[in-house]
Image (tube, rainbow, N blue to C red; front, side, top):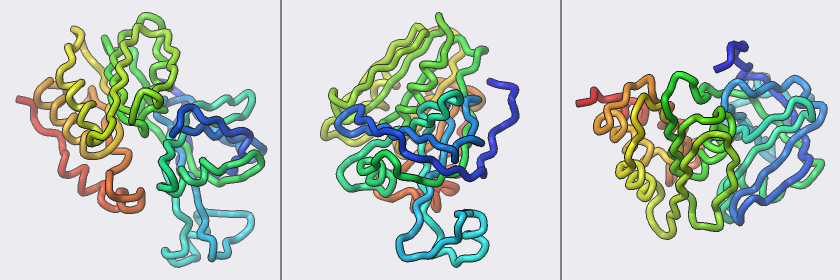
Length: 278
């Protein structure tokens, strides 16, 4: 962890698309830059995230764009939509911010934008937020997640020091969705192919069956809310991990968009309140 002050989660920035790269058939990386990123800062955490802002087409917004003013002066049904995405990388020297998007057809407001993004396009965003980075006090590190957690898992593996021990379980649709991850750590990276199965099933089975190394683990488990809930129970109750050893959260929930998920997430958090390990 860094001793630097926490980043300003509410700071508004404007990014310009510099380039777009398809990493796999369904994962696209959009690299943002430009003068609007001069005040941006990230690097304290490996799960940094930003909230991308998508104005409604039929609403006239003030110029320069000010999200706080919009939310103060306009009715809620005219507020822009926001979508949360992990910072894959940030280079303060080149002032380049990379964000990866999982794209499946025309589904998803942000994914649709990313799939059609072109150099010169602009987008406003808020952030960064974040709160996790691999700790040096752990004897080893556990990572488990789906495509939505892949950027944070990859950034975390890259940030580990030489000799650090890690196990990473990453579930994707199929073998063509795997990505190269370069890490100086002694990392066992297991790719799980979902195929036609329910998302998270293969991931839960693999983590449950895994032989854990000796010593204290720090775990990062993120992704679709249903499997995150089941893995949280497994790690807390069956593996006996303490709450402080876990960074665990549902990034999304199948069947609803982010607006619907955020409206029910506090209830979900209560439902998965940490049990007392047996």
